[in-house]
Amino acid sequence: MKGINMGENGKKSIFKKVLWSMGAVMTGAILIIEISSLLLIHKDGQRAQELFEDTIDSYGVFWENKLNETSRMMLSFISAETGALYSQLCNSEDKLTVETAKLQLRSQIADMNARQGYELVTFVYVPDRNIYFSVDEKNTSYLKSQGIKENVFDYIAHNTIASKDKWSVLYVQDTPYLLKIYHMENGYIGSLYPAGHILEGLYDQEENWVLEMVDRAGNTVAHMGEPYKGMTVSYDRFLEYTDAGIRVTIGSGRLYSNKGTGVLILMGAMLFASLLIFLVLGRQTRDVFEPLEKLRAAMENYSGGDMDTRLPVVHDNSQIANLFCTFNNMADQIAHLKIQVYETELERQRINSNYLRIQIQPHFYTNILNLFYGMAQMKDCLSIQKLALACGSYFRYLLGRKGTFVLLQEELKCLSSYVEIQRYRYQDRFEARISVEPGLEEQAVLPLLIQTFFENSLKHNIMRVPLLQVEVTVEAVETEKMKITVRDNGIGFKKDILEKIERDESIEAGGEHIGIQNVKERIRVFYGQTAQMQIESVPGNTVVTLLLPLMISKGGLRE
Image 1 (cartoon, rainbow, N blue to C red):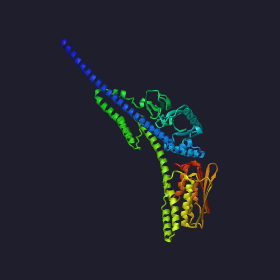
Image 2 (cartoon, rainbow, N blue to C red; image 1 turned 135 degrees about the vertical axis):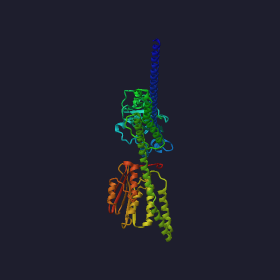
Image 3 (cartoon, rainbow, N blue to C red; image 1 turned 45 degrees about the horizontal axis):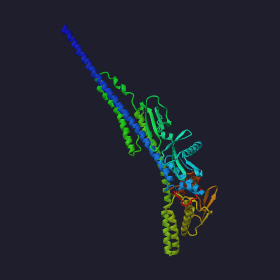
């Protein structure tokens, strides 16, 4: 009995050992699998957070480049080599010169704002002369503009401005801006970016997403989104060249999965452990590793220059889907900004291209060569000499290097040379009268402004009326305005052309009216709303009227 008892005790002991061994092995296997899963999920979360931080870093680099580019543009306005207009504004004793410099500098600053996507306010301030003006293409309200002006005055009065200063934070009516000011001679030039606008390009309107702009001390300057009450993850990205940075705070659930801790508890036996491992790894590969690889490849393609790279939209509300949406939103914002700048540059290039097409007229040169040939056959040496001088003067002006504006006297000299050339061709078939009010010869106008309409009169009327009469008058009207009138007794414009001009539509068709269309577009681009063009036409009386601002310049014009 005793031996049997020992045997039974031994069997029980072995059974228990087997059970304990199997339980320990199964428990150990399950723990190892769970720990492995937790480590994998944690690693995935870290990788997701790194990609999240890389996205914010990319956005920060974009704004750092933009702020640096704005600083360089402002310096170009006040530098010794390219800042002649700013120098005139600060030092010239001639009032008209100061007003002209102000107008042209405002136009150049508006071009800078256009290249920067119309997102900033740029001002010029010369305290000694009580000069202050700002450029803002987004139509800032009057109260906001006054608030900016008052706060800028107060900032300059209480701070020493140095070129090495960073972009600092300025509050205007409780609205924060990033401000950069340069001081040169006795004036200041500066730009302001709304802090909220900098955050907009990165903001995700879903829950658990808070964007803040903070100063170096960590104090909040501006914020978007509602604070999240649960566990959060924050990342700070301070912007170079500034005293502020971007802080992004999101719920940790958007980066770290909450399902990993209990995934493997459902395993009831060692038999299913391996299967569950493969299922977990397969799911991780499908839901995390492959999407993250797509995001990495997309970011590499985008940074390599493929601006059309986008990630597929996933509607599962996972952290990967949110990262995909963040990447797409950032790419769309950058592409939109680049398209705006690109379209503005294309518009200017198209107008300049049409201007060059007006200057290059092969049939005109061919006609002149035919005139020389005919005069040579007649051995009319004196006429050849006079025509050669007129052609030399005309071509020198036409093909010479000019800025955006030229003096009126130079434009009229070109017109006189053109009239003399056409006189040899058409003899007494037309009369030309040019009348200029004294004192206007030094005004600035766009080149080929008058000659284009004079040439149009000859081209469309010289063979259709017995004697074509063309009269050009230039006179001062209203306040700081100049009126240029080109009148002829030709057959007039077609009704549909006049209707298109009245509706401000393009009148260029097959190159027939490219000259007038180009003048119309150049007036719009370089004068804006300060100039007007009007055409009134009936058979026997066509009047083209240009109303331009007075722009007196001394020492030459610069573009």
